Length: 600
Image 1 (cartoon, rainbow, N blue to C red):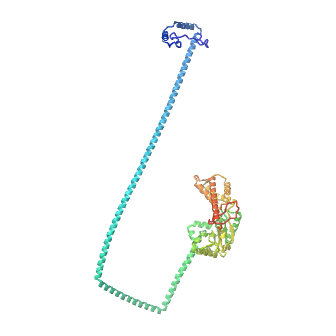
Image 2: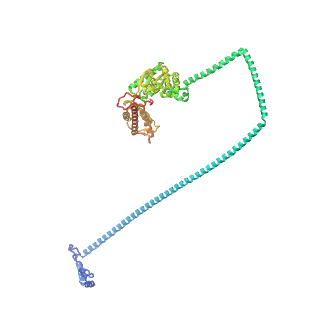
Image 3: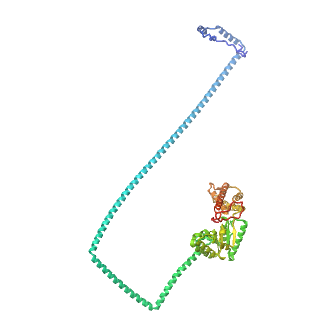
C-alpha cells in the first residue's frame, strides 16, 4: 500500500490487474490458428487470485493510519484535475470565441471586399453606360450634322435650281420684251418715215419759214442793241463826270481785291504764329490761346510755377553737373538782362540726359522750350525751307524767349562738301544757316547729336560751347538706382492706395549691387529698370516685389545691352568706314556704342 501514500515514490507501483482483462498474449502467439483460439478462451476465464489481492489491498488501506490523508489527497488531486479540466474548458471556450471573432472579421472583410467589388463593378458599369450614352450622343450629333448638311445641300441645290429657273424666266421675258420693243420701234420708224415721205414738201416749207423769221428777229435785235449802246456810249463820253467816276470805281475794286488777298495771308501767318505751332516743332512749353482754353488748370500751374533747379532729377558726374549749372546760371541772367544767348552743342551716347537737361534749362531760365528732330526735315522736301523759316518766325514772337532744342541734329546739318544730300535738304540747311548767322536775343539754339563730327563747318562756327555727356560711372549708377527705386517702387508702395509692396531687405546694399552689375548702361536704361520693377510687382499674384524679381530684371537688362553691343560691333566690322560715336571711357566697362538713330 506504500504507493497510495507516497512512500517509495521513486519506484513504480505494482497496480493489481483487473480480473476481467486477460494478460496480453506473447508476440507471435496469435499467428497460429490453434494458439489464437486458446487466447480467446482465456479471456472468458475468471481469475480469483486477483480478486483476493484487491480485497487484501483494501483491508490494508483501511487499517493504515494514513488512510484519511490519502483520501484527502485523492480528493485534492481530483479537485485539481477538475480545475485543470475547467481551465481547459475555459481556454477552449476562449479559443472558440476568438475563432468566432476571427470568423466575424473574415466575414466582414469578405463582405467589405464584396461590397467594394460590387461598387467597382457598378462604377465600371456606370462608366461603360456613360461611354455608351456619350457615344450614342456623338453618333446622334454626327448623324444630325450629316442630316443637316444633306438638308442644306438639298436646299442649296433647290435654291440654285429656282435661281436658274428664275434667271431663265427673266432672260426669256427680257428677250420677248426686247423683240416686242424692236418690233414696235420698227413699226413706228416705218410709219414715221412713210408720213415724212408723204409730208416732205410741207416740212421743207415750215423749215424755210422758221429760218426766215429767226433771221429777221436776230437782225432787229442787233439793230436795237447797237442803237441803244451807241446812244449810251455817246452820252457817257460826252459826260466827263461819269467817265471819272467809273475809272475811280474800277481802280478801287482792283485795290480792294489785291488788299484782301495779301491781307488775308498776312493775318493768317500772324494768327498761326500766335495761336499755333510750326509743323517741325514736336513738343513745346509755350502756351497758346487754344491750349490755355483747352487746359486751364495746366496753364495756371505753369504760370504760377517758380523756376526750379536746372539739375533737379538729373544725375550726372560732379564735374559735368558743375559745368551745366554754370551754363544754367548764365542763361538765366542773360534772359533777365536781355542779352544775347549762346548756342550750345551737347553730344554723347544716347540716353545720357541731353533732352532732360534742355527742358530743365528752359524751365530754370524762365524760357519756353521747343523740341524738333532732324529726322523730320528730310520728308518735308521742298516745303522744308518754308517750314524752317516758320520755326524761327514763331520763335521771334515769343516774349519769354525760346530754347530751340534740335535733337538728332546731324540728320540734316551734315557736311555739304562731302555728304550726298538732295537739293531740297541743301536749301533747308542754307535757310537754317541764314537764320542762325547772328546771335539772337529771342531764341537760344541747343543741338544734340551722337555724331558731332558729321556737322557742316558752318554749323560748328555757330556753336559757342560744347558739352560732352558720357555714360554714368559706378557712383552715378548707384545714385540713379537709389533715385529710380525710390521714385518707381518705394514711393508708390508707401502711398497705400496702389497694389505694390516691397519685400524686406537692405535697399541700399541692393542698389549698390545693381550699380556694379550694370556697367556700361546709360541713364535711360537704368530708368527703365525702375519701370520694369514696378510692372513686375503689379503683374505678380500678391503685388510684392522680391529680390529675386529685381535680380532677374537686372540680369535680363544686362543681357539685352550685351546683345546691342555685339550687334554694334558686328556692324562696325561690316562697315569699317562708317562713323560711330566713341566715348572716352575706361576699358573696364564693355562698349558704350549705341545706334546713332536712337533718340537722346
